[in-house]
Image (cartoon, rainbow, N blue to C red):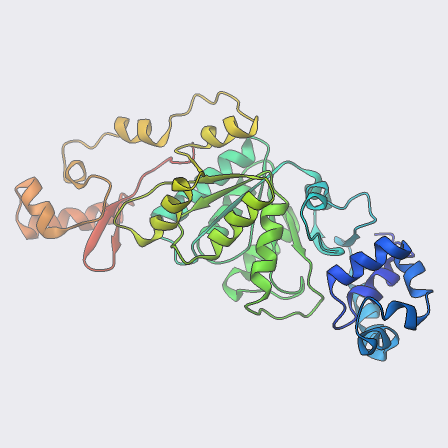
Amino acid sequence: MTLDPGLASWLQLTLTPGLGAAALRAMLQRFGLPRSILERKRAELSAFARPEVIASLDSAQVKEAVARALAWASAPGHHIVTLGDDSYPRLLLEIPDPPPLLYAAGALELLQHPSLAVVGSRNATAQGEGNAESFAQALSDAGFAIVSGLALGIDAAAHRGGLAGRASTIAVLGTGIDIRYPRRNAQLAELIAARGLLVSEFALGTPPAAANFPRRNRLISGLAQGCLVVEAALASGSLITARAAADQGREVFALPGSIHSPLSKGCHALIKTGAKLVESADDVLAELGGFRPSGSASTTAALAAEPDGGGLLAHMGHDPVDVDALCTRAGLSAEQVSSELLRLELDGRITALPGGLYQRLEKGAGR
């Protein structure tokens, strides 16, 4: 890429330790572009930050960090996008605290693409991951890039679904863009860099830290026109993202689940407070004005049409159930029920849950 000659000035300000985004935005408003800020006397800039912070603007540490970032940005597929660039995502300009710059790797044009956030639990069930991937692929095929946070569980499934669809996916990181976290998703991150987009507001080399992820979450929602939550406990980072989405004026959607599952309680709480309950991707598209008749059934209709064949699956319902209850419902012995459960699990029709419970896997929920 051709580097903006003013990029070094942006980097010098954003890489100065202790100089926060709010102070930088205030200086931009007062003095104009970063080059104009840096031309000011350091005593004048001390009105916006502590004198020792302003003094470090010209430190060797900052100069080295700027050189490192410029070298990174010179590599193919690497970008640093500033508030002054035409490629800065328009939706982020609407949030109260847009980052002064973004590090990006991959298809930069996705920053201007219609997008939907899909988030949820790191400790997701197989059903939840299947729903997230199916919804994400359907929404990606409908033209929405899928935005998520590259975490384990629902995030990773959403990215996979986005990559499988035509509009791809954006992963917003809580680390420097050169850090692969979590390590289990390193291969997925490389795939997204090749076929989608990785984005971070954090400086190169920034390790994962608890305080980084709420900041990342506001960007996940800020980049998108809406936010879909798939499986979330009541104390969940996904609910932080959903609240940020609501505060930013975005649509919030939630997928309902079993009343017995802790991972449904966050989604149910969102629905109670105004999030839109969705059963299919078409429900989301209708709200966002992107609905196109797909001829596909909702979750409820698909399950009603599913051929259970009168076997054990017909007695399971859609809530977790144990072997004793199934024996009573089906009139079978424990040995017969256990054998049938094993067959259904191997066929991918059910999943085993903690506590000796089993739950039916609902196929095609995203379509």
